[in-house]
Amino acid sequence: MSKEVKNYDVVIIGAGPAGLAAALACDDSKSVLLIEREARAGGILKQCIHDGFGLITFKEKLSGPEYADRYIDLVSEKKNVTLETLTFVTLVEKTESGFKINMTSRKGMQTVNAKSLILANGCRERTARQVNIHGDRPSGVMTAGNAQNFVNLMGLLPAKRCVILGSGDIGLIMARRLKLEGVDVVGVYEAKQTPSGLSRNIQQCLIDFDIPLHLSKTVTRVFGNRRVERVEISSVDANMCPILGTEEYFDCDALIVSVGLIPENEIAETLDVPMDMKTKGPFVDQNMMTLVDGIYSVGNALHVHDLVDYVSQVSEIAGKNIGHESKRDLVQVETQGCMYVVPQYIDMNSLDDKVDFFFRSKTDMLKAKVSVSVNGEEIYKKKYLALRPPEMEKISVPLNLKKGDKISFVLEAENESACPIDTE
Amino acid sequence: MKLTCIECPKGCMLTIEKTDAGVIVEGNDCIRGKRFGEKEATNPTRTIASTVKTVFEKMPVVSVRTSSEIPKGLIFQVMDEINKVVVKEIYPAGTILIPNVLNTGSNIIITTDMTKILK
Ligand SMILES: Cc1cc2nc3c(=O)[nH]c(=O)nc-3n(C[C@H](O)[C@H](O)[C@H](O)COP(=O)(O)OP(=O)(O)OC[C@H]3O[C@@H](n4cnc5c(N)ncnc54)[C@H](O)[C@@H]3O)c2cc1C
Image (cartoon, rainbow over all chains, first blue to last red; front, side):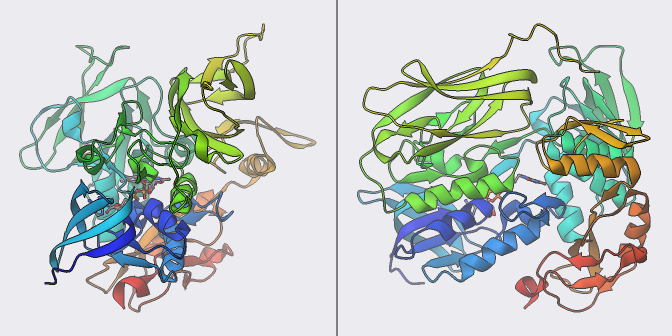
């Protein structure tokens, strides 16, 4: 094992779509190390075999693996990028000139130095343990992502008859996938009053296949010795508390959970990168640089994206910015009415003509307006007929700021319409 | 008929009406939504994605999809065709496994590059 410590301009952690796009965008003069813990690049897209990826980037409906392959091929042509697979980053430390990255692989422990760091390590799924289910802990309780891995990569069917808890997109996609493979999908149960997944997935994964969606219902108990045998489902009140006396029982051999994704940020936290409680990812400026100089955050590690095309776009911004950093002058974007807005900060010293903002509404809204103001004066507005929290929106705002300027981002319902919208 | 457009993640809520003069689509934000609505009223089609078994231990299944949309009513029959196939060679992505499946004009194509994994 060589003790020589290699120096890179950039180290990227995670070779999913975010890491790949960032690597691709780095200037050819920069030495880049792209580190991936799995055997191949592509991230979660490897198991997302359904179509619908790349509509924006390639104007085609590709499957996840095809979308990933386009980037993998382009990255492999870049002489300045080294991809290390089966390599797990365990710890990153701040040094005087940058960062020291510790990793383990078949070669053993290894350390490299980097001037800049891009965190592209994706998100993880919330598990059944993180929701309030009582009863036995038999096998057969799994996340939708695990089920996806079993079916699409290992070729194993994890159920004969299953109940899906949570209406997140991966759960919806898996409801359809399992149904196609002949599994009896009892239904999708969602504790909230509105589904968490995209409307189009409700249509093409559930309605198309006659899979029922039950809102305001949740799994309250799991029964089974070694394997799941049945589940108890209860209605919940507006505070999502189960209502006694509403219990129903269903026999099944698997409970598939799709109750949300959380950005993966253990490494960022150990580096004391300030976090946004709303996105559960780091605060960033318009170049995707966190509040710690030299550390970028992109993709699902920054905030959970529902469209891989946006993941690639945003990651490209980070890659392009490397080598063009100067002293920053950050102003925080004041927000109102949104679940969250990214970027949360603007660096006034590196403003291009436009800044792309991504946001989600807090609740379902009909007729809403977004407005961006500088020092109280509206400089941009956009109206929406409908907004839903699962559907992330993007706006491009021409921005010109000088020292001391205040910027605000407001989402509000438009109440000027006298006649209510016909929802029939 | 009311349904969500599945052409893009925007998910417009469409109202589709069949009249003597043709199909009327409302609620769509773009031309793709109009076309989708018209097809839903006449001949709804879908892309389907699945996996096919292989003989390779390192890659027990390989992902596939229809190269273009197939009639919605044929989804499970096309699945039966897909499930009859076992892949015995190493193919790149895009390889046609079943040409013109059930005379739909659509091919079943491989979507994961097997050469990257097995060679
Ligand atoms: C289970 C699951 C299913 C999904 N399905 C869909 C879908 O069907 N459609 C859709 O549009 N979006 C889906 N998403 C969202 C999807 O993740 C994003 O669109 C996109 O893949 C995010 O890209 P990323 O590169 O940020 O993250 P990822 O694709 O998750 O890539 C992160 C990469 O970082 C690597 N990594 C993490 N930590 C380390 C470490 N310490 N050292 C080295 N490597 C590390 C991981 O192995 C992984 O390859 C899904 C997400 C999940 C979790």
